[in-house]
Length: 67
Image (cartoon, rainbow, N blue to C red; front, side, top):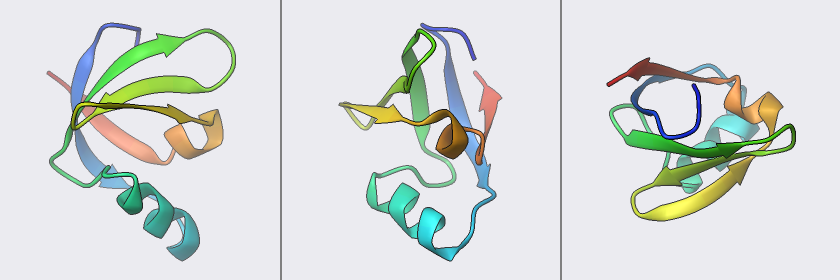
């Protein structure tokens, strides 16, 4: 998703440890996320009012439908 776009988390395809970490960050199915920045390194996303930096490997595990 390009910076400035929003989407709803549909599914998280991750192993047990990664899934737990993603959920602890507040990213769960149904959550609205907004991409703040994506400049070659980590992807910055706003989730529940907080900006998080997600590595690209972790971000690929989060399936989102555009809003």
